[in-house]
Length: 234
Image 1 (spheres, rainbow, N blue to C red):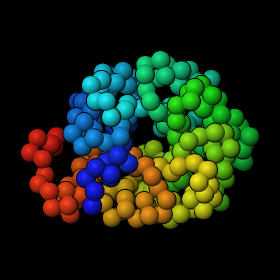
Image 2: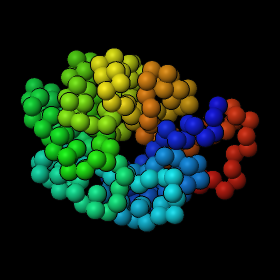
Image 3: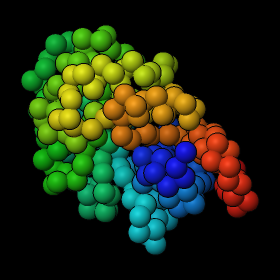
Image 4: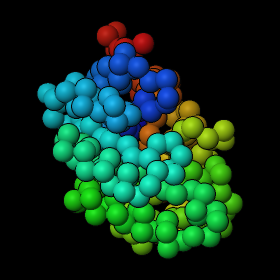
């Protein structure tokens, strides 16, 4: 178990409707303590998060577009991405037009993603396909479309869906896209064994909420034989 490598695959988030300023401050503190690769919150709190991480050179602040449904107008997504870039985010996670995908409007889905990728100006864009709502064939199609549109990652979910991401979901995405983009798992990654199983299947980034991040880090410290830090935000 590597106490440095695994945290660099984790970004911690608080992106629920009920997210508070205290939650944002908590994820910033945990990201700094464990040296997670980054932290994400809802757009209204993103500037505050960036300020909290100002002195953490190795922990980036990311922004989200289209949470949680992905059904914003493309121009709205573009405007949000533009403002996030101005704030200083280093990555953008966007939700695709899930209903349009299920409806077979593939060109629309692809152009929606491409517009945000272009507005991001070279920042990595991770596209959330909400796999929990999709059939296996739809997962494959969504993965192909976001890669075609230039996304850096296929991301499994927002964490708002009623079903968790599974190792099998990662397998389907990896078989579909190969090395054309990276894979981020989010939503229901609740144990270190689940994380490691997804990593073995080809997943390179994990989006975790506060509870799951703390659970996984405690498991990692225990298996590494290292004492749990006394000053951890609990």
